[in-house]
Image (cartoon, rainbow, N blue to C red):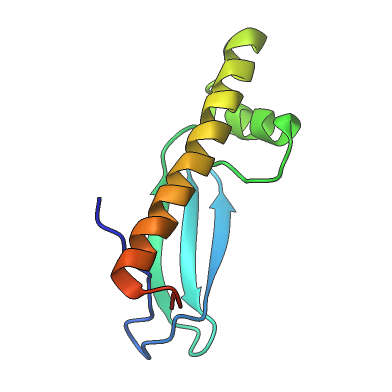
Length: 106
C-alpha cells in the first residue's frame, strides 16, 4: 500500500477541503483553501462512502442513494463490516504515513 498526503499542485499547500457532490454518482472535489485551485476529483464506488461518527440511519441513506438496498439483516452486517474496516484501515494508513513522513504529519 502506498500512502500519500495530498497537496495542491498549484501552490504546494496542504490546506485542502473536500466538497462532496451527490447526483447519479457521489463525487469528492478537493479544493485548495489557499489558492482555490481544484486539486483532484474522486468518484466514490457504490457503497463506498462512510462517515465516521454518523449512525446507522446515515449509512442507510447512503445505501439508498447508491441503490444497494438488500435485507435489513444484510444492511446491519454491512454497516458493521464497513465501520470495522474503516477504523482498521484508517489506523493502518496513519501508521504508514507516520513511517513515511514522520510523527509531524504534513
